[in-house]
Amino acid sequence: MHTPLQNTGFTLIEILVTCSILGLLLGVGLPATHRLMQHVDAERDISELALALSEARNHALYYRNRVTLCPLNNALHCSSDWNMPLTLFMDSNNNRVLDPGEPVLRELPASTSGQKLRTFSGNVISFDAKGYAGIDNGSLGYCAKASAVTGAAFIISRNGRIRAGTDRDNDGLPETANGRNVACPA
Image 1 (cartoon, rainbow, N blue to C red):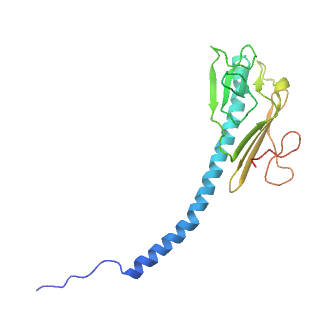
Image 2 (spheres, one colour; image 1 turned 120 degrees about the vertical axis):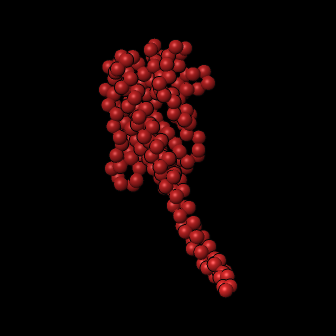
Image 3 (tube, rainbow, N blue to C red; image 1 turned 90 degrees about the vertical axis):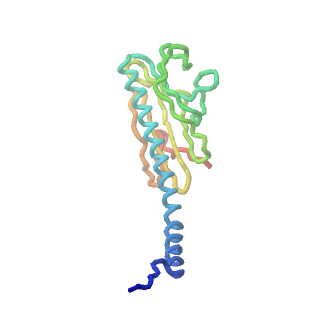
């Protein structure tokens, strides 16, 4: 005896309803995912800055040698554009130049997107053999501005202590040592 074949496919209505639901989920989910990825990217940048600062002081103490963190120009001199790539290196002669034979300890990529800004009140962050920053103290600020603003401030004292800036006025941005918000891109 022969039984008729049954159709097991989807109806046009089922396909349209499924596509509509999928479209709604993607319309809501993709922007939220994009915002989350921007926030995670900013938090990663902040963690890398904190690690570089900690590593600078720790290397200076451990190796009993001057260690400098700064943006280097083409001549390998420290410059004042903190959005260029940052280089952490042993600066044995304290000339703020990456000389031949001075090892590079870490490099941080440039902050080239118009949505991120790194600022520092001086040209170099440098620690001597005792871990003191001396005149190279100041505030290193970071701000990422996309769909939400994420910022951090690292305040370096003369004795080399590094502390995070706090948001005392509850506006979502931490303040630097002078009590001003970290600078954000326009």
